[in-house]
Image (tube, rainbow, N blue to C red; front, side):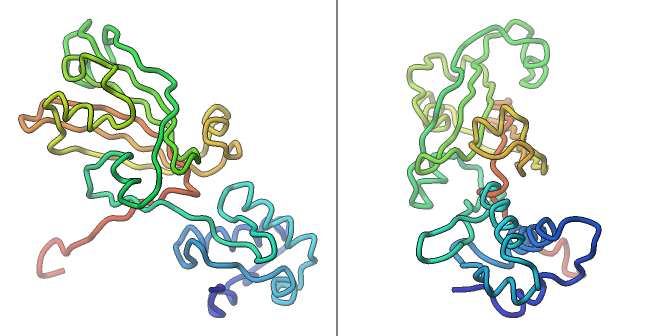
Length: 252
């Protein structure tokens, strides 16, 4: 299915001489994608149609499309055209791990471990988890993949008493904790938009400065004991957060 005509009319509106035309076209398409006005799997208009609509040259059109392909928002399918890349939808109200989330969506999750160790907590780690300085913690760092494609980087600390044997941790942290009779009952999460550092871009196979989502997650046991603190960086072109909203009161 191609972009609806009403959305096509938004492309090129308001262009000026403040920046190169290819950047303005890329900005228009990027906004339509990130705002969810065009969905994963939809095709974008052909270069010919975009040329007719915008009066821009094919070189300009191709340069804009190439930019969005580099950012991971578009991909070319030989003989078929250019399409919107798939994005993983995460429901912000769900307390679930990456492994279960991906399996629910029918994709294959995996990890590349960067660090897996037990050490004495630093003063900052102890403060975060409300532990005594010197208490043992597990430090975990890994790249999370979906169908072998890098999706995010996770850096986690948890009290070592809750996961004393790291050999039991192969992929799903929450499954390993559950095996030790420890499961999160509730949590808090903060999501901010950002750009990828050179190191993050390399690990995620994206362009330096590309869009990412930075996520801080705290989870707790039923008695409010801190269980986990995770800092994650997820690809902004592949990951989207959604939440259900309800009126605060009937007078809204």
